[in-house]
Image 1: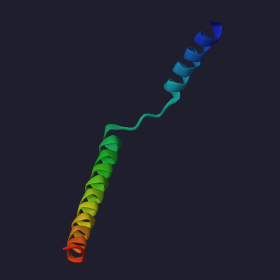
Image 2: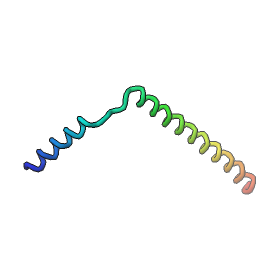
Image 3: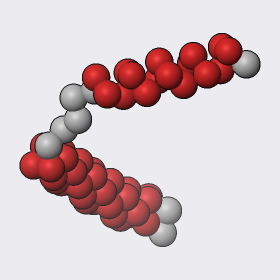
Image 4: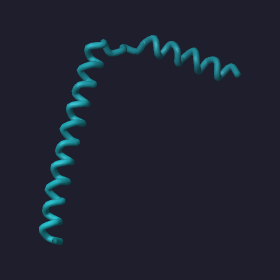
Length: 60
């Protein structure tokens, strides 16, 4: 039981040492991820359309 209590005490102390990102940093990171995901989605969509056309040309 003592080990469990010690674990949570140490975990709490570790969380107090964490340098949390600012709101601006979180927003910038989120924006970068969203832009990347949208771009990757568009690229995947375009590749899919190109392959659809190519398959229709090969297999009418």
